[in-house]
Length: 118
Image (cartoon, rainbow, N blue to C red; front, side, top):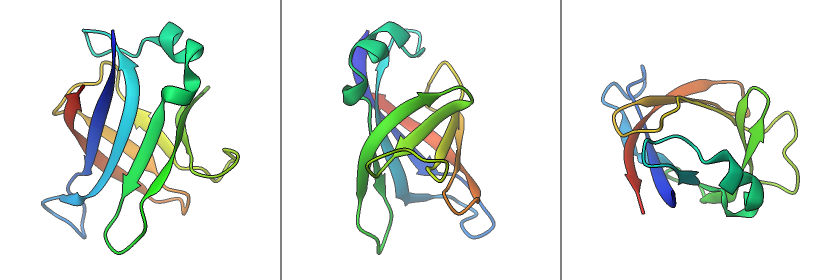
């Protein structure tokens, strides 16, 4: 098991039919060799599970990944309220698969997992 950086890039949408590498999230998660999240390691070190949002013409946002009953949430502020972006990601986490992120404004966007590196 290793803490890995997972890069998500915007997949095809009506506004971006070919997707957009400039619209990305970087996640740091403890992944087992099979791509599953090491829940025990995550529980031992929740502050290591981070997220960074890169978006053109906007400042980067940095925060934490939080495990919720319905999946994952991002905390970019002091607390992760109901308005926090929600992440739905398949397990195992592998390049080529898709994740869905429901932004705070209620719009859900598809993201491709393009990298799971050290």
